[in-house]
Length: 323
View 1: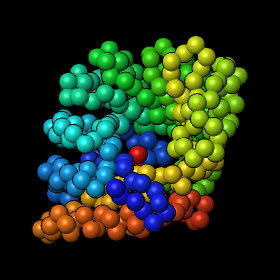
View 2: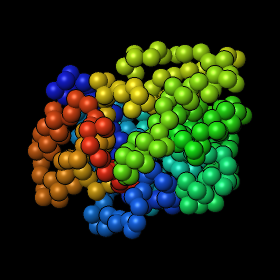
View 3: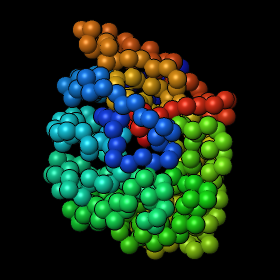
View 4: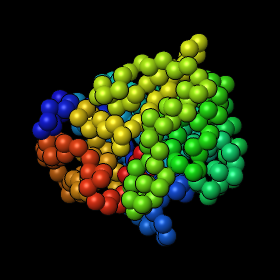
């Protein structure tokens, strides 16, 4: 097992396979010119697979593939199929913005993917264009419908933003019920913007929950302060689960079980860590498995007790780190 200095068992790895994306969401990309990682500096699939073999050996049991937009990465199905053959992994998941999901849904299902998370922050075309810089909302919705048609389980990820989508939350629940999806609302975090952006747009999970309670009778599946990463609710008479990710109002750092591998090979023990271990360089220097394992264990031991939101400005490009 991978255990950090605070006794947390680390068994979840998020892998960003590319920093490219076909959307430019307000909270994900920095302002101005985007400097993408040169293709030769991205982790190659054989490098990712060698690292995942080591991670699974060390105790990782769940992997989620992210981006940027992971379906933009050429031959991504090859990587997913190989990961799904890891008999000691309990789950391999995928997070996507949905634009390319429809044309890949059947192949993902055949490969063995059971569930995809789709990031969609509005159901209104004009608001979608404001958030993403694209007018492709219809394509995203059709992709969700196709994913459900072929039998994929879909969870909708909604970043809550005051003044942008805070009047749509009941619409989202209606949409999730109609399409047979689960849904979770995520508090906005100050990644790629000055703190003022997040503070102006921030809306707490408690406020969202209060809005939903005006339209539905919610039943709690987890209690506040339980230490769970996600507070879960359901609606009487419905099968969907409604989750709330609350890193600001209800941090779950004390129970965090994850690591992040960026598209250029940096292993980060916390989403907001400024530092990391460059596993790509270790691989390309010809380091042994034992040397890389030692670097991973040391990175886990250095995992901070909690995130540093609120302790000064944080600048983090989510398109490179992965959501």
